[in-house]
Length: 211
Ligand code: 3NM
Image (cartoon, rainbow, N blue to C red; front, side, top):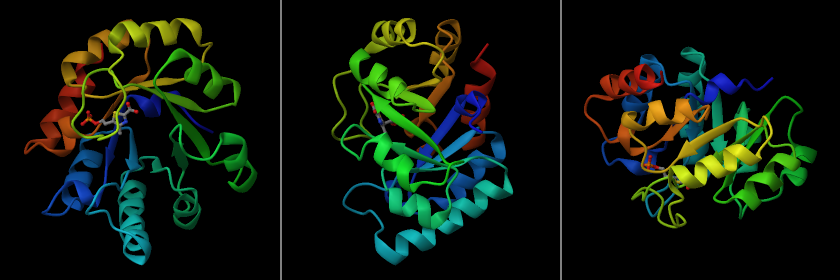
């Protein structure tokens, strides 16, 4: 069963983000207390095929070691192959109904939304959580939409029922108090954790700032 607490600090990463290898960064983040992990392998250097599956198993094993839920982005077949805990779908991926038909009952599904309409549709379709953003401009997603800011996030929060929400896009630890104040469940983060030398300090700073 999906637990909204898992959204508190949702780290997203993949092998394609770094030249020097991502596994030590992922392990440091898991060890330091990120509450959920998403494998998102995108871009010109993205692993594919057997190499992606092999890498995915390694990441899943790390998540298991630190008892952190493991989510696969976009790729339903990869989520099934790896036996992920969850699948994250964008607006351009298959619908949640299609995904539910083939996924095990206990695999949770998250959906990205950038505006109120998309968020309400995701909720009505039974998404376990909605990822709302981008809040700020982000360099990490090349096709990110126009930032919606905290005002856009607040509008969505006000109109959704009790569906768990995680904010995304350019977030830093400084945003955590405001997320808490808006009763947003947490932050999904790539660069402020994955591109830092002091991964552990960053993770702890995010976690201690949600108060
Ligand atoms: N999705 P960073 S923004 C993967 O708006 C992703 O749906 C977004 O990375 C959305 O923390 C984004 O480096 C990138 O800004 C988040």
